[in-house]
Length: 102
Image 1 (cartoon, one colour):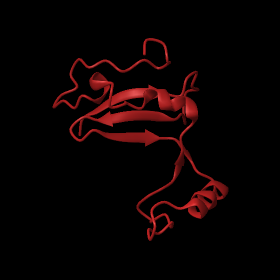
Image 2: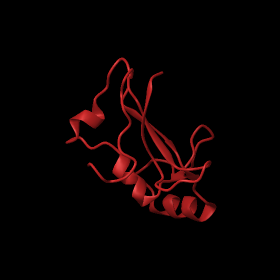
Image 3: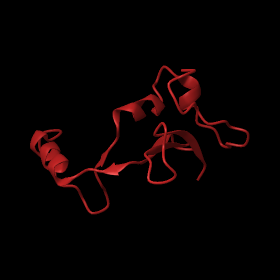
Image 4: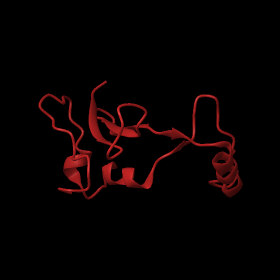
């Protein structure tokens, strides 16, 4: 597995901070963030998703809360360099950790 760092919660302390990586061979995002509280999970279950789909969170999944200021690190289809999937990350530099330069 080859991960590329995309961004971390701005002005982060030394531990426990929301972080996003890109899995380069698949294009999947790997996200570390705050676990959603029960109120948030219940609200999402009430809203639901597609008709007929269970709103239960299976044991192999979890619901997270991604802070709004972390959206700046999620690649967009129009940002081809951020979405680039490559076989190697050697020499790859992380994306900026603030909205500067984007």
